Length: 343
Image (cartoon, rainbow, N blue to C red; front, side):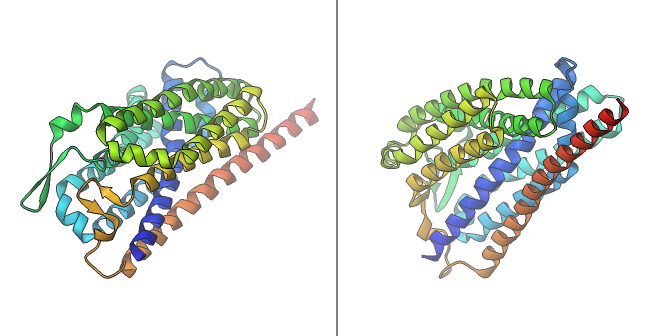
């Protein structure tokens, strides 16, 4: 069915954005923390070399495209209205502010500590805001009143499942980013930064496991039907755990950190798609199913165009990451050669 194809493409785009954005958001927080409170071990500098205004434009562009995709499904937009759009609008505002604080921290020495702190904190607020969309999809916060779904903020803000998802989103950002930056440090041959980043990666792997367990416990209370269906896809979550153990083992042993990052990405691939598959056919429990997303026969061409544009933004960002790593690696080699020649 075309609707299922559309949802699969959307899920792939969302997963890609999660990995790319997590590296950026986490790097911003680590850079802020090291700049303000860290020891003078050069870690702040190495992360600042990785950060780029390009990430801000990529994040804003992808978020706008995802908003367009969601609202292309007319039935969902009609039912949810402001409830559906609010997290995206709030996230868009935070992304713009994040870009502004990034610019101010680079160009204004006056108030540098404040701009840097705000830049890092917003990087942690963003995943918490965006994860609210997945939380709402489990149901329990909405009432159908005359064909329109009304969202109850009081239920949402006092709900254990909602806060467990927020906790998971934040620690996941720090874990994924630390894994990538540890790999980055090996390429630029910065042993001091590598040791600190290895410590971050190993430390945040623990809360990641804890947060994942809390989400499963909370899901059983929030949506027993989805919890039981997730048990049918247990093999995907087991593979996710195996990837985590493999990634942590490689980082602990200080070998093949590039493979460790790939395993970390696969860890979230299996968990994310296991969650998505077990969630089907519902998009919003119990009101909206996949086949009810669009009032049209099939998916319009403009939705496919939005998917293509989203992937077109993702691929350059991934290319930028690996070109940057390669450039810094080559630059480090040239630097070492010059020092040897002088000696």
